[in-house]
Length: 101
Image 1: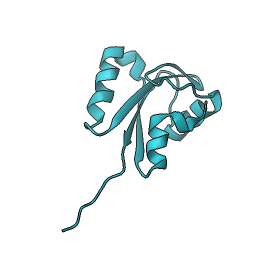
Image 2 (image 1 turned 30 degrees about the horizontal axis):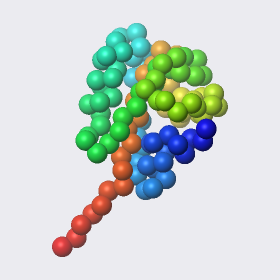
Image 3 (image 1 turned 120 degrees about the vertical axis):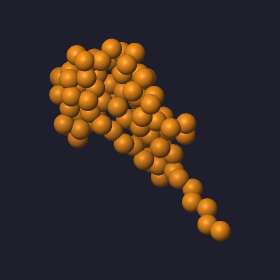
Image 4 (image 1 turned 180 degrees about the vertical axis):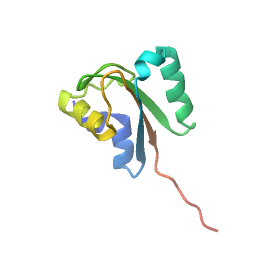
């Protein structure tokens, strides 16, 4: 499967944004319910949030249904400086429309 099918990347391709942050040792300090709640709180009603628990170069658990290659997971982890046990939260924002009067 192509990463273009992954909603945040397709949103970015259409002019939106994908922002992400890492919670160091988040999996040891937060329950799955708390992680899901944090991801939901990070997004506004027009945005979509996703989360993943880092395990080595990959992810042991995530809300992402699109299968990523190990290379893509490792690249995302590297970009965020994420290590095993960290939690990644990504928020995809659709393109913003500015109306001028």
